[in-house]
Image (cartoon, rainbow, N blue to C red):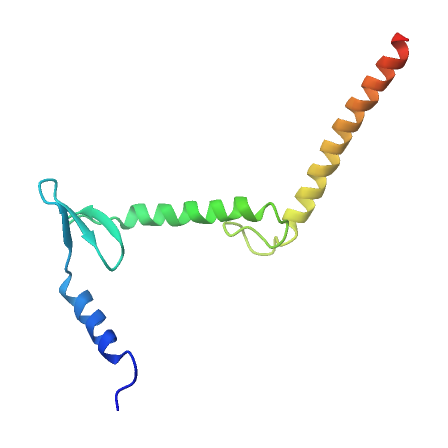
Amino acid sequence: MQPHGLMQNRFQKWWRDTNMYIQVLPEYGLVADPMVGIVTTAGESLSPILEKVAILENVSDDLVNMLSGEGNFLASFPGREKSLVIAGSMNAIWYGLAVGLFIAGIMVLNLMLR
């Protein structure tokens, strides 16, 4: 008895081995790779671009994860797990000090002008 999905695995292996592409715009030489899901120029590699996109994805994940203050940056060195918490608290202290001094200055100015 064959395990479930054996025929599908054979089909996917055959599909990858044949390097079949779907022609999107033959006059411009554009083809689509259905296994990867990318439209590209026939015969050219997009691997340098995909590597840069992976780096950008890490950076964008870091920007989103900065909001929680937990964990560490994906594009950072190891051993800096508490850097987000420390940086967030220092940021809150400085902004709190600036807003507090601004409000205190307005109150003092209001009292002096009476």
